[in-house]
Length: 273
Image (cartoon, rainbow, N blue to C red):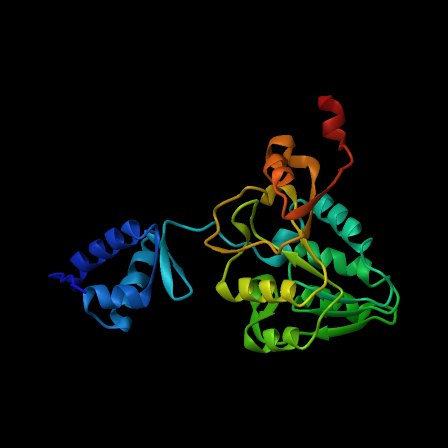
């Protein structure tokens, strides 16, 4: 492999940008280190500089060109598309039988689902969502809640990593409910980090049925960096707010089932009609 030399740190950073662009918009630290013949620490400092100047976004182990959509906190996301998330959660809860074992992903729609699950008798629910655990802690039912454990991710109040994954590997649930940042009929589901994607994929593998919960604002969105394929024969529950054009790619796909909940018209909708 030919090592590309740069005369100064500034020149190297310009070349790093070119290398990321030529690599499809993303690259790993180790690849840049080998390409430029400098240490991993030097590459990380260069990437930090480029990130601080808004030219790239740092990712786990590398970087992508441009800025990812700013991540909202869990509290901020709870009030976004709240009616759709509640309707999706209610529809999802109807799929759960009393006494079932459930894997519940972290997120706002899955968090809303936890309120309905808490009313179903005899459930065992394993989750990495702190919001769901708080709901179960206050529930006056016989629900058996198990925290997956792992490393805390404060922004979305979840736990991820090897500890959480080891718990998931020890069970085979009746049903898994998975959240996503973006949903594409071909790319699949997405997360902010590789660790989140890994846990979602593992939840799907360790359940008899997988249900992906995604409000219509997430359909066909492509801003995310990390993607995981949708499990075969999974069910997708979304809402009808996006319209038929947004739903059509999912309706044509044959490897999963699509369930669309109808949202009640708001006062503004009634006035517009």
